[in-house]
Length: 210
Image 1 (cartoon, rainbow, N blue to C red):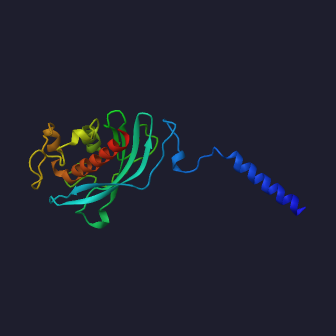
Image 2 (image 1 turned 180 degrees about the vertical axis):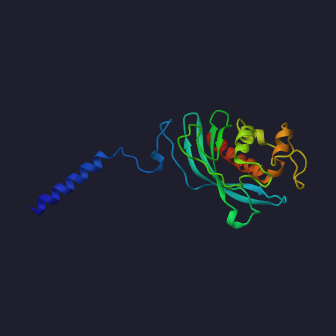
């Protein structure tokens, strides 16, 4: 009886394994709009952070999620928004970003909901409001639209959101929207961090999807 039971067990196991030849396991098997894609948890990109005193340090931003759809790639990018606050209020934040595969431009950015409002892809880790009184809603209404539509080439020569010198750091490309610069003048660490981290993400995207 035991031999029969063992034979049936082995036969069943072989049958199951044979039937599962086409089964895919792991993050590379996640499917979606493109019929393929996946997630990555070990992609790290470097960018140079500048604090409110003009000190620059190389920091790491982490790509928590990367999914290739048919026309664009979805990312969750985590980076430190500020390095000069006390540690107990110095949080990492997560940007949910969609970048076009056609021209490498930002098609959507959020520190909250995705475009359809189905899930929360981002998290705001900065001050709200900033010391200058700028809220996340102000960023969503005014600053994020300035980022949308830009690719890595558009940020060439732009490392700070300012046309004149920022602690001896000077852009080599002029930003036409001076009124917008003036609006966010007191929130330069936030805007500069986003520009630098997103530029690094755009370069990563261009290398992998161009």
